[in-house]
Length: 333
Figure 1 (cartoon, rainbow, N blue to C red):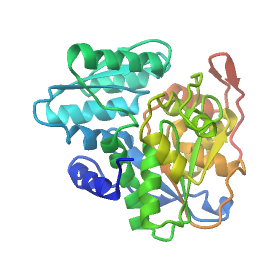
Figure 2: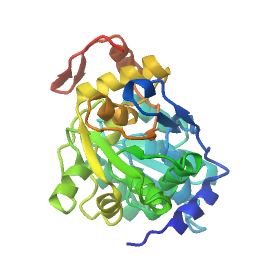
Figure 3: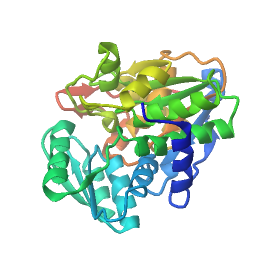
């Protein structure tokens, strides 16, 4: 496996002038959970999401002569690629499926990239990105299975352990594994005893099902409050799958209802507007699926969400997700 702590340290240096070292702040939920809970606020990045780290790390490590890049994205990786490509002065084409929220299409376009809406799933969007590589000679920036992307995301692990060497547990949103694999690898290299847990939704959990099967598998992609964590991990996955398999201590699944209540909790208690993917760690603790035994950090990964859905959740209204409806409930502390 071609990965090392040296690669993450090099990425930290490469991205330093474009990305921010984000705050790590205590949550108001700490008292309720019985241990200190810290929020790593990646929502303060220039694009409002952690994905900027990996995109800048990869794009600014490309050789001279590259004139354009492409990617498949649920939204935030696309924003990161668009931002980094604009900073480097090259073309960017971001391929997204119809499941991505309109706010994320608009965000990609606002950063100067072309956003192509392709098909009903991330697999359809991925096929278009691969076509662009073959037919238009664009360079693909994988959203999770690229060593420079993973190294960029892994810088979060460095920052967490530098800020709080006493961390007992890190809760990481889990999708394709670029964030979880990078953070877990970095954290374990610094402190092998720190517990790193990947958290994802219980519908379409590609990395979870792949690790259970012992190899990458396909899953059905469905609408979710946790849309940033949708999509597969790629049947030819070479890096993020083994990193998650080898370095995550556990993977926990949360329901749409648990995500709904966690979105309410972080808003009403911490005054934070966030995507569903951000709160899966809080959802897991709140539902009793993760037991805390010391200082714990969770990564608040992005804020690029559909504000209409957010307003419905804060008001306790039902939220339809395709043929499934999350029943609304007023927030109760």
